[in-house]
Length: 216
Image (cartoon, rainbow, N blue to C red; front, top):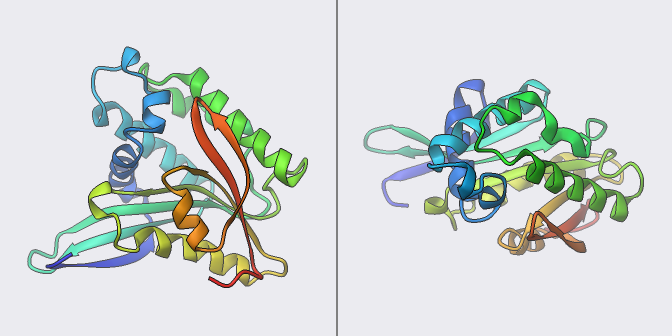
């Protein structure tokens, strides 16, 4: 993009509102339609962004590595967060009840039952493909979101590569994730392979695995 440059850094608590906004934009037509159904809300980002921001901050406080892509206008020096990734390290995997925190139910617009079903389906798929421990013994990409206006700039690839580098430094390193149909091509290009397909809250998802013996 002319007149701007991209950089990547670890997220801070001050970034969480901007991260929430990116997530709201990225999932507006997919996940948000399920967990924030129209029957429960009268606005979109006005409800979804604060919820996503609080959820991101909680996860950061739990120690989950979180990184952002920052677009800097070369003329004004204004910085805008345009993408983020949040990870779980080996040994800190959450359960399918991760969606049950009180902080995550702070708005009446949230369909908590739909969120719980979706998280439960993802946990069940992880255990089906990886065994009873699920993804607990490997790196897990919990969230990757890119502002739709900044797609095709290599943001997703760069954010995912950070986790791949962490796994590659470990013996028998692995990275697991659950992809939407929209995200699947990116992960395949990075060397992930599809383990299975399943529906979560009425949306098609793919469980995918990357191993350190893959060249990407």
